[in-house]
Image 1 (cartoon, rainbow over the protein chains, first blue to last red):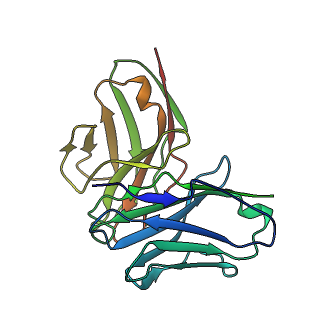
Image 2 (cartoon, rainbow over the protein chains, first blue to last red; image 1 turned 45 degrees about the vertical axis):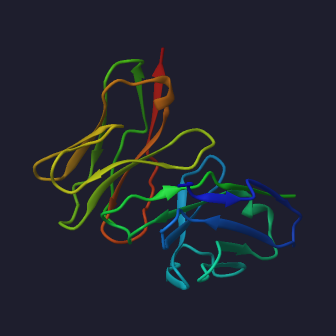
Length: 115
Length: 108
């Protein structure tokens, strides 16, 4: 059973371009979470999705960021018109049940660099 | 989620036990106590979680105080590969909220 797969591992974008980060959860997992880690800082929650639904997006910036988890295919975190401050490591996690009494499995992250 | 307090850093010698403390005095009855760790340049890794009783798994043990206001993660024999940031997180149905954690240094 493959773990949580994120791709690409490294992504370089010029300011103003779009960044698309993909996350394939573990098999059988329908709950997906996205986190951002700025250089030398802690992990910040962004969004929690459960197949086709956004459950909690309280950590998502109001503009330029969006996330989806379609019925088929990976979850996508999309950043439009990237700026230098978006440079960070983005981690995805999945779980078989909702948060609380369950463990979450994290991917290796996508490291976004905006030049 | 209720807040947790952890020491910024700890140091241990290799092959010795490590006790990582966590205070959570405002814990609610439905909060599970989770521990995750993050090795350098990697994604977080689940370590253990519990509600009221002590828990053991192949990685570690979790000792929970009777009043649940504190807990301790126990690594029975630290190895160099255990050097990481360890996060104690309370969770009762929302996404995990990571704080600053404890940076564990393991010396040979």
